[in-house]
Image 1: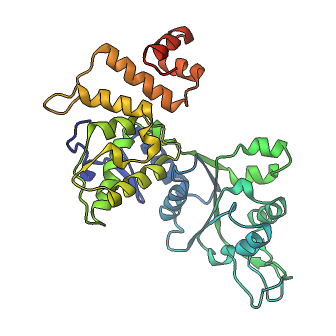
Image 2 (image 1 turned 60 degrees about the vertical axis):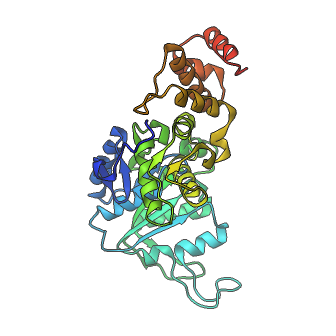
Image 3 (image 1 turned 135 degrees about the vertical axis):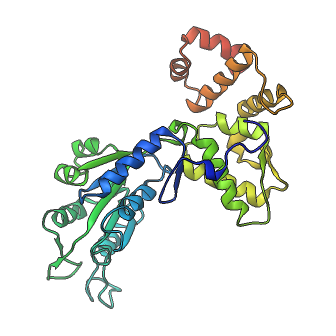
Length: 333
């Protein structure tokens, strides 16, 4: 990538409910989201943290016949079992200490719409049984109440946990697992989304250019080389946070390496950045030899696989002995 801007928002070929992509993998997912939205089937969204699971859930809702009704979301990992029960099902006055009045839960307030259960694997077993009844008969009882209430709500869930493993461990109900995963959608990691690192980088730069006094119009070679080599474990959320921080703390029209988070500026990443910028031509594009290209691939594999030699060798398509020689030659071991 040159120091000049090469991606413009108007050239993005696909977007859905705030999600931007040029990746074929995501465009295929968008089509599955549109198809899933047409029905009332439960959906389970699988993906790592920061990949945009709630955005997918919201897109399903906004593309569905329920779009004119509420969309509600809750992270099941952020509440104690007692508070989560009240959050989901509501409670009646006097149900517990501090319950001074009746309170409607998310199931009631999402009636007619969609309820998104993030980190559904963290749902306590008791609440799993209550959720199962909602899915079976569309009725529930508030905490401390005696009267069942009817509800018409679509359930979309998300997790990165292996539900079958949790079922085998007795931590998740098998019947509920099958109920919530009629449709399963898989969100790829950022590094698996072809072309999206560059597209999303400029998308977020444009977003923060409009919010603050700084106007970024270019990314220097060192910063871009570091960003390409980094594995982005926090996915899109981590990328957005980095661009926002650089926008707030940096100065001038060029985003530079020193403005990125420290983990992007590890020794190996900086060496890659120097290599990328050292051979740039007048047009800003790197001019590489075969050895430089191998070095860049080696460092990228090193960061993406966390230094694990077996996975590095497999990614590079070389033997472990060859990998060892290259690592030693470049001072990485």
